[in-house]
Amino acid sequence: MKVTKVTSETCFNLLVTGLVDLENAYELKGGITHPYPQNLQRALNQLALLSLRTNQPIIQSLGQVLKFCKTTPLINWPVDFSQIEAFPIDELEEIYLLENIPEVRTTEYCQEFAQDVIESNKPGLLQREVYTQIKNLTLRYKTIEEKDTIYREVREFLARHAITTLHERVSFKLKCKAKPETVEEEIFNVVYTHSVPANKFINDKIARCKLCGSLVTMHNDTMTCAVRKCDFNISKKKKDLVNFINPDDTVKLAAPDIRYYLVSPSVPELKLRDQAEKLKCKVTMWPGLDSYDLLIVCPDGYKFCVDVKDWKSASGLAQKCSETGFPMSDIKKHGIEGDKYCFVVPDAHKVNKPNYKEVFQGHSDAEIYYESELIELIQSHV
Image (cartoon, rainbow, N blue to C red):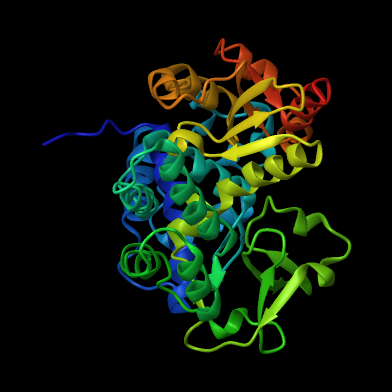
C-alpha cells in the first residue's frame, strides 16, 4: 500500500480541493451532509496530525476548519503553510479560503489554488473522462483537420454552456458532424447531470452570463457570475450581460467538475481568441486534438503557438511548464508548428502579483507573456 507523506503542502492541496467539493455538495443538497468529501476528510486528518507535530492547538472539527477558512488569513493558521514553495509568501496575510459560512462559498484564491492542484496532478476526475470521450468521437475520421473540427465543436459548446436548454442541445446535435446519439449518450448525459437549484434563481428565472455561459446568482444584492474571473464580475452594465431562462426539467447544469475544471479555464482561452480575431488573425482553438490551446496566424503569416495558463502560483506553473513544455512530437506529426511557442497568463496576475513573471522566470526557461503583452506582439505582425 502506498503511504503518502503528510506535509503542509499535501494538507493544503487536500483542503482547497475538499472545500471546492464541499461547496458543490452544499449547492446540490442545500446543506452540509455526511459523509464529507473525501479530500476534505483527509485534510481534517492531516490538519490534526500537523498540529500535533508542532504542539499547536488541534483543529478537531469541520466547524473549526470552516471558521478558520472564513476568519483567519493563512499566515495565522496553526499549520505553517508558508513553507509551501509555490505560495506567494508576501500575500499570506491577505489570503482567506471562504467568503462566508454556514452557506459554503469559497474565495477566488481557494478556487484558483484548487485548479492549480487539479491541473498539476491530473487525477481521474470527470473532466478528464469527458476530454477522452470527446477525442473518441473523432476516431472514425481520418485526417487531423476532421478530428480537430469535431473536438473543437464539442469542446467549445461545453465551454460556452455551463447551463443549457433542451433546444440548444438538440440544435447542436443536428449541426455537429459527430453522430447525434453518441453526443447525447457519451457527452451530454455525462456532463449535464444537475438542475439549477431554485435558491439560485433571480426573480424566479435562471440567469445565464452572456460572456461565458455560466450561472449568474444574486450575492449581497449584486449579480455575480459563477466564474469569478469572468469580465461580467467587473462590468458596470451587468443587466445587459444576462440571459434569463424559464426553469423547467429540461434546463440542465453541468456537473461541478466540468464547471470548475473545463468551463472556468476556457474563459481566458476564448477571450484571447476573440482579441486576436479582432486584429484580423486566423485562430484555431485546441489544434492537434488539444496539443496546445491556440494557433494564432497573424496577417503577415507569423504563427504563435500559445498555451494559456491561469495559475495562482507562478513557481508552481514554472515547474509544470518545465516538466511538460509543448508536445513537439505531436505538433510536428499534426503539422501545427509555429514561429513562437509561449505560455500566456491573464493580466489579472500582473495586477495581483506584480513580480509574477519574474518569479516564473526564476524557476523556468520557458517563454511566458501576460495577455496584453502577447496582444502587443501580435499587433507588430498586423
